[in-house]
Length: 510
Length: 109
Image 1 (cartoon, each protein chain N blue to C red):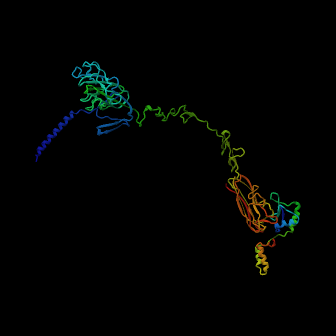
Image 2: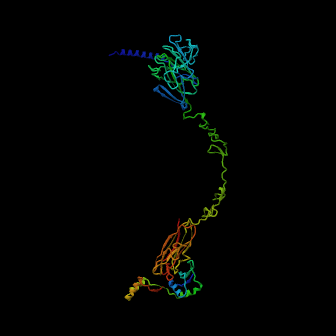
Image 3: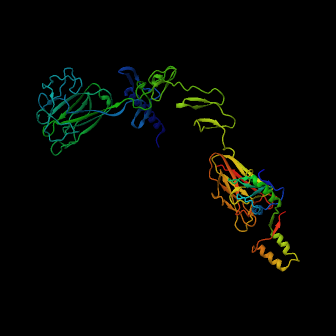
């Protein structure tokens, strides 16, 4: 069992040591401060927080990657515009270093800048050698590498074992926004080539997979790929790629590389339009001081209080309109010759608008037929009708002879009554003349229906004419006898036959 | 009014036509009658007055006309059922009602 006082003593020592250690560590940690520039001008310094403003700017924490993500609307987006820099381009400069000689060390210029620095002045090297154009070996058995078009660089002369060649490649990049860059490089095999510098910053080392070589057996040696931060590159300016190539086993300094620089296109954020798009083709129209679209943005021509905008985006004078020919209530407008509008006064009561059959033009006229269907009838209630005529004769020219005016309709014709002929066997005939023509038989000796002989019987009938023309039409009942010795009688009420007879006509609606 | 008035007298038009013909007046267009007027027809079949030369003859014949008609079934039935009707008469009635012989004529009233 430990002594509590001893434990308390040890805890006191631990607390004091912990405090001291924390203070020492804190004093050794540098301050994490930020500085901000606006187009190269420092506007803030020694701050710890960057505050991104604006309604479209979105800042989110990404703790998994120990970073914060800032999305700026309207920022450039990737495009297919890519600039490729390879070792096949002109402007590469090389310097051989020889092991054990006076030129064994990389040179420093007169200002003390290393050979890989962009500002390095390429004068006579401190080791006495001069920089020259890099020789591209056209006979190397290796194929084009890393991409088609790039060839292998070799030292100008065989430098011997552990030879080195320094390469400086100034190149220009077009203006624009660089979104990403990638360097693919393969240089002398292990023990490996030296550093690779981009604008003075080391981005890694060259070299290929151990055991690989550019020869007939290994025509496509593996290469290394480096992702280049866009901040390392200078769009619209001269950049410098420098690398230190170590000779391989067959005493050659071999190297090939491709630098791919990708550019972005501005203004592809669909949530916003640029002011530069205002009033431009496929852009948008700005509003005037009255918050309206200026007429000049709507169409060509002069826009004023007499012109109207047409569908072809042209301001044009409007039509003069039609002069009103109407002067009185209920007038209507009808077209005259060539459609000239004219006045047509209202017609009389119950007249209808129709086409006058004489003038063939629109006119008011009293309808003939139509609304009311015509009909007529006569019922005989006193005295029979009799005849001895063997040809068809009128039963009653006064009462059973109708004239009605119809439309272009059919007419139903009927007779109800008894009839008989005093002849004992054969009977006589009944028929109706419609507009002077017998409906039943063209022969005067026959008719529509036969009258019973010897005794009275039902002689009723009904028929429908074909459609008649619109206008006046006559309907008349006829009968005959088989012989002048016999009599044909139609019942007429109160006569010898008793009963009644009725003849009628009725216009149908169609 | 077209034609000659019958003054309410019963007329058997077929019988009258035969009587006119027997009196020497032929009316080929035939006779017609209604509303107690007897008339003939013109060429169109319409009622027409008799020729002026014939009107006196027509009136004469019409004045002597005693219209007759066939005896009806009802009249035959009354006679047939009469107890005084002889068997021979009954046979005549049967033949006339069945059309084997012409029916007897009786005055029209």
